[in-house]
Image (tube, rainbow, N blue to C red):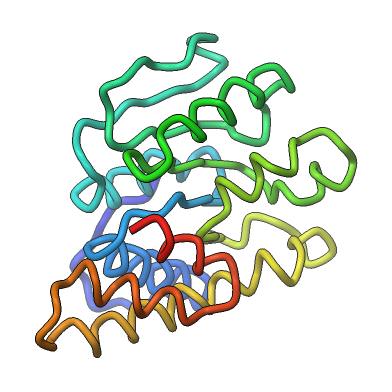
Length: 200
C-alpha cells in the first residue's frame, strides 16, 4: 500500500506519472461525474479510491462480487465496482442493467487489475458493458506489460483526461453555468468522453 509522503525525495518516473494521471482525473471529477475505469494492481485499489473519494458523488456504494454476489440497491450516486475483470457473465448482465437504469443519475467507478478490452475480444466480457464503464480510462502503476497494455482506444482516453481537464478549466470562468460549459466542452470530443457531455 502506498503512503503519502512529504519528503523532497525525487519520485520514480512511473510513480510520478501515476500521480499526475490521478491528479488530472481528480481535477476532472470536480466538474463532471463520468463512469471511470481504473486499471491498477489490487494492492493499489484502496489507496486510489481514498484519493478519489472527495470527488465522488454521495452516497457511495461499494460492490465486490467476491464478497457479496448481490448488487447494492439504490439510492447511491456513485457505485464502486471492485475486480471488474473478474465479473462472471451473469454479474456483467446485472451490472449492465443497473448502469442502464441509473444512467445520468449515478456514476460507476470500476477497478480492474488489468485491461478489460482483451477480455472483450475473447468474449469473456460484455462489449456493451465495457463501453458503458470505459467512458474515462486511467491506468496506474504500469500494471500491464508492454505486450498486453490494452488497445490504442483505451490508452487514448488518458490523453482525453488531460485535454478535458484543461478545456474545462479554461472555459469554466465564463458567463454560462458550469454544467452547461462542461457539457459544451465535452461534446466537442469525438471519442468516448463525448458520452459524458450527452449525460450532463
